[in-house]
Amino acid sequence: MPSYSPPLRDIRFVVHDLLQTERVLAETGAFPGVDRDLIDQVLEEAGKMAAEQIQPQNQASEAEGCRMEKGVVTTPPGIRAAYAAFVAGGWSGLCARPEHGGQGLPQMLAFVLNELTSAASIAASDYFGLFAMVYHMVQRHASPALQAVYSEGLASGRFGGTMCMTEPHCGTDVGLARTRAEPTADGSWRLTGTKIFISAGEHDLTENIVHLVLARAVGDPPGSRGLSLFLTPKILPDGARNGLVAVTLEDKMAYAASATCQMAFDGATAWLIGERGKGLAAMFDMVNAARLMVGSQGMAATEAAYQIAAAYARQRLQGRAPGKPAHPELPADPILCHPDVRRMLLGVRGYIEAARALYLGLGLEVDIAERHPDPARRKAAADWLGFLTSTTKATLADFGVWCTNDCLQVLGGHGYIRANGVEQLLREVRLNPIQEGANGMLALDLIRRQIPRDDGALWRRFLAELETEAAAAPPALADLAAGLAQARARLAQAADWIRERSAADPSEAGAAGTDFQRMFGLTLFAWQWLKMARVAEAGLERGNDDGFLAGKIMTARFFYRRMLPMAEGHWQSLQAGAETMMTPPPDYFWPDA
Image 1 (cartoon, rainbow, N blue to C red):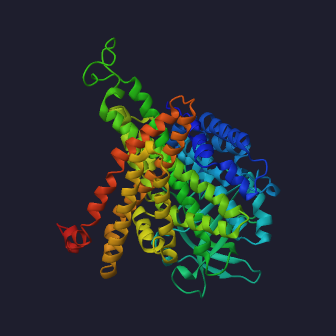
Image 2 (cartoon, rainbow, N blue to C red):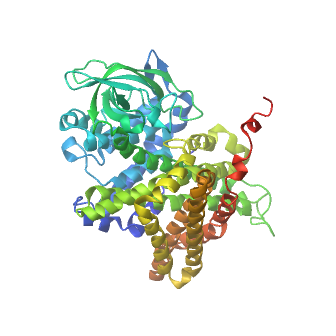
Image 3 (cartoon, rainbow, N blue to C red):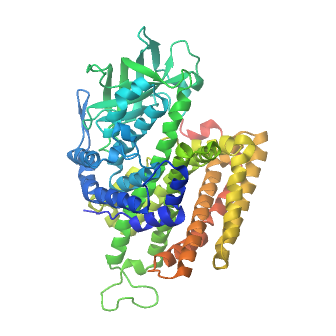
């Protein structure tokens, strides 16, 4: 059975050395007593819970899966045990307000917690993350009366929660939603409609489930601007069962232990949260949080797969190292001696460590956006999150699939065997480029909305950040600084090319979108690697390195020389334009029709 060792050394490097988290949190004034020692204690305990109480349940839970009978879903014993451990440790209320029984800790620590639990079991982490997001949505958008009813239950883990957007006929285009809401005399609403792909839609982990449902109030206009957001509990405050039921349990490629349901609402009692007609804008608070969670699940699963692959590569004897035997006393050398195996493992490290730096950096921006005393600083952080969230999700999701696939390749035929654990992780991460916005749609969002946003102010800020980082590099890292400057220039050139071409033909943006998004993601990673290399180089100058800091710089150079050049290929590809894909007539795709 595979095991998992929480990468706390690298997480501490990012949290303390790279992000200077203690200093940044102190600037907010919102987290008195949260210092390095407390942060390290949280990391240690979270890692222990993930490795000892959640991960050992993972394979058995996936094999057993959830079961449904007459609308009642039973989760696997391992999921129930993992959830019980999560709640007993107080993790459900990690960032919840103390008056609701929570610990009031920074959101950035919840980001770390999500990585650790996702690496241990993505299915289990789905429940944990969703419930926490619903708690924060209730705090942000619900009336004080609804907060009084649901806050403590969500914070304590007694209540679960869901996000209900997708319908059988519409996913990305939620403006086509047909679920309707009718007002009643007492101020509540009655919801009628069907939602699909609802994670944790029905289960036996909590005594209640709080559904956040997008619906159209009767008489409101069509399209996304006519949607409102409603809080719809499984169990009403008087203890009666509400008019909603799980109709089916989806039979999926993976995540068998995560209860993904089709939900039917038949006159279900609900309460409006937020403003009428502005439900989609409110729901996007949760969508963006979910996008970061989904991206991080790709990174976390790849970390788990990497640990299996690296251990296998050290132990598996096969062939001889190039040149001469590395271990002549053995009948063959470990496959770690072969260059191609090292290429795969270093590529995975190049992804994971850059992704972690990017992801946790955005977690810290969440705390600034929510708790900094300066309104301008809060707005700047919120805008930065809005600018980078979709591309971060897409980049972490895409690389998660590619790199987990490489981990399976390291194991060869043994990677295809269920007992070794990597095939499950690969099946699971394949959902990430689809979930919470297909990556192709997010690429269009980047080109059409994020880059032109505020007259391009955030785009210019991003380019300036890259320029500043390249200029700050010490002479020992001049090669990396030059690589980042070149990637920055090419990315800006690509953005200009797309803007000019799509002005005449809007299909050009769609044709170039994925290539541009991947260029952007590789440049994001290059930025993170230069920042980490700069911190590592400063640490080396102070001495006392055990190989960790030198390893950071070696991996940074691998990324710049072996992975960042992929951006140039995407630049060449996007210049092919829309003609190459829009010329074939529709019948071309049905040659036998």
